[in-house]
Image (cartoon, rainbow, N blue to C red; front, top):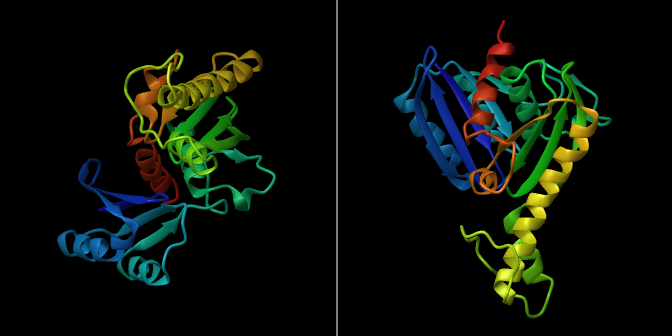
Length: 242
């Protein structure tokens, strides 16, 4: 059995695979990671390999526990990757972005791809059809935009996301929604348009916590469900298994 661990800024996700298929998945708060793993290995002692992709520092006791129980592979720029990394400072490229680029290369080989991960931050990563990672961008996610407008002004309220499409706000709350949501939609479409002018048949892949919400407001999008990174990490683990 194999274990995929995807650790974000606030939540963690784990998926256990058998020979080919997923047999168990769970989501947990970061403070509960150690007891969750202890229970997991009690239920699935057959887990022999683990891939860990984390954007936060992992407690040494957790790393030690995983190394004692399995062969542990941590996602970083020094591991064997299925693409050429042209990032000027590869050691600073986040594990989540490395995993997303790998997933894109595995699932869309030979294509020009822009993968957009809409989470706490929105990351943009471009992979050309020759398998070269060219770089990308990072900008605030929707919740971060809402919080920034509220916390850095005296009177703007903290709003919550609504499903209804807001084209123009007729009150303060809807104006904030229109600015944050439409601003991000236009930003994504701008990246897609700019890269599409220089790279034919650009494929836009949208993933992350706000992907489903945003996909309804974007054109020409391949919506990658929340398993996109996890599936790519599983393939990256196999890619590094000799």
